[in-house]
Amino acid sequence: MISAIAVLPALILAILWCDADARHRGHKIGSVARLGLVFCFVVAFPVYVFRSRGLSGFKTLGLAMLFIAAMIGCAFVAGLMFALVAHFAGFKLPSPPR
Image (spheres, rainbow, N blue to C red):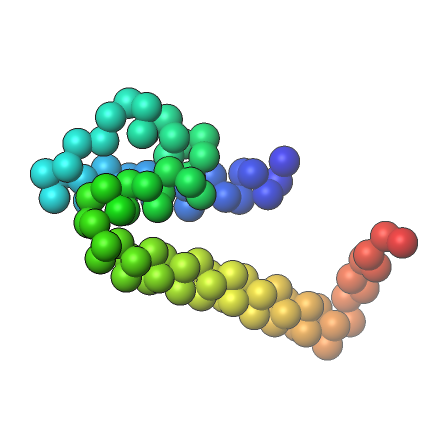
């Protein structure tokens, strides 16, 4: 449940970006496509990108994947820094369940 709550702001921002991009390019996102973006973003986003950009959508998808990888990397480094600070400050971190 927490992971779904953590992903929700990114999903909302991505959908708002798609909406703003569609308005900027003069492309209309239908209600079915909008529902697809909400409920199945992994499939609907590439479909939107290729419908609005054609083959240059590969560049946009590549940049999106790079951005996602950077966000995951930042989250990993932040978690690692938190664990290191907690360790050196003397806090006991919970062990993973076996």
